[in-house]
Image (tube, rainbow, N blue to C red; front, side):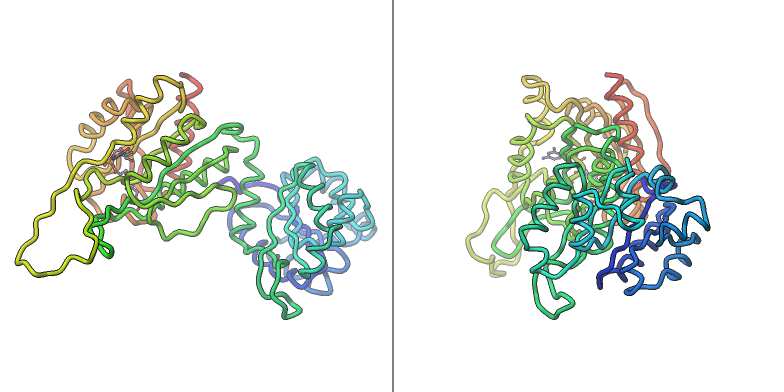
Amino acid sequence: MILEGKHIVLGVTGGIAAYKAVELCSSLIKAGAEVQVVMTPAAVHFVGPLTFQTLTARPVSIDTFQLLRDTDMAHISLSAWADVLVIAPATANTIAKLVHGIADNLLLSTALACPAPLVVAPAMDADMYAHPSTQANLRVLAERGATIVGPDEGRLASGRIGRGRLVNTSELLAAIRATLGRQGALAGTHVLVTAGGTREPLDPVRHLGNRSSGKMGYALAEAARDMGAKVTLVHANTQLPAICGIEMLAVETATEMHQAVLERVPHTDLLIMAAAVADYRPVQRAEHKIKKDADDLTLQLERTLDILQAVADQRTASGNPGFVVGFAAETQDLIANAQVKLAKKRLDLMVANDVSGSDSGFEVGQNRVILLQPDGKQEVLSLMPKSEAAEHILARVVELWRRA
Ligand code: PMT
């Protein structure tokens, strides 16, 4: 939702990757943003302005003087209109000119006058990218606060393999979202989110696990990043792609997750435990694959450490995390069971999800949750995409945290 209604100036420069800006433009429009495309004169050799004009329902800006005659979208008004200026792809030439304040086309003069944050996605030949001038120029832009995204390594237009490819659209979108959210309600905070389901090994090929996909935790991590937080995501056994702009830390077992979380607690302002952590693990892990010799097999299990309980104890001493959110996945007596966990684990907010149905909870893309506060207040959220549920949860967290 962070892109909805946002004014995005999309600068397209003259490189073979210019055609990929079409997909970015279309994705931004689909996400509800208003997009004004500014092309450099070189870019129009690679992709037709009509394509962007059709997608955005706005005339594409190319020539400063043409513009001044035809519309009021001169570089100054474009700069003032923008919530963010995105240059994708950005050639080595444009990057160098941005550094030196050269304004010899409409995109560059817009950039020079633009107070909005800048996202630069370099795309060029690998040698041009590796050249010390380009490297130094990118460092300068980053030092000035620009978000530099990519480039990726892979097959280049020349047929060579190297670093210089424009990053994919989802990474560009993530960078734009994160840049827009830089001054958000969680700016300056460290947020630690856990996601996925831990696995407790029985032997080298088998484990005890659960159905958590990680979707809920990933949505929370992304939403926290979009609100300006520095986010670490401790994820267990998920198949989801890494999230741009977030520190990703993979673990497998409850013990590994316990260790990863406890190590980071002293530097964490907000902890959100969305992971489904095993409560029991096999007492013994067989060294070799267990054979089916016997008719039945009894497994002896022992309790794992409760991470939230340990956080509560450590928190008393250090004060961090300032706010702790737990999740409760229940198939019966949802509120009563979740309230017991809220109190026992000394949480600031409990997110209770009924996982008995097939349309919410584990694996699926949406969730139906109830937010429980320590003072007994409850907030029922209807079935909604996990991304939206994450935004609701974080909005409530910010409100309660500020009040505390
Ligand atoms: O990953 P998805 O497919 O998107 O599914 C999301 C989800 C259903 C897994 C998620 O929304 C959820 O409910 N996560 C918590 C599931 C769970 O394990 O609940 P619990 O009631 O067993 O645990 C209560 C809380 O204690 C949880 O915050 C859990 O992370 C934490 N816990 C549990 C065990 C343990 N040893 N240490 C813990 O800290």
